[in-house]
Length: 223
Image (cartoon, rainbow, N blue to C red; front, side):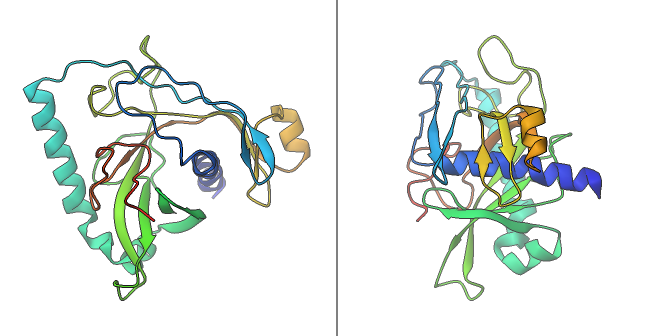
């Protein structure tokens, strides 16, 4: 239970940090981008988005990526019914953010990448769906050291197509607000959970096409 709580706190810090900058989308291959001092719940929050430089993609990489995404669709088909996701341990966390939707966090912490088991399911509210939510995409967490290009080493999706990002020095407080100007000790003194550096994260819009690309940070079509 303690491990599960720590994992949820880490994922919460990622979600809340990403939510605060959901309107800032960096296109793949646009170079390293540093994002600092944005506001979340009235508080300044600094964090980095490490974006890789443009790299060529091979036919084999395209084939592999298409196969992985197809596997992801097959595995998450059942989660188009949000009740099935909830029964499998996914729970809504964080706000409903335009361009990102609602994050449903599951029991997978990203220790071992498995395309069939995304750490997060992304939903948007839908009056057309009898359950009130439509699945629009998935998010993966990935543990790996950073390469010289600012991207994780041996990432499962080629860097020419997908840009992974992560956040640093985040303190998630009991009310789910986030501060980035606290040390580990200060965060603990306020009853928060401190994350020095989150895992790498990437979105894949496999259930609702994104005009900005399947791996874009946000999906402008999600309201």
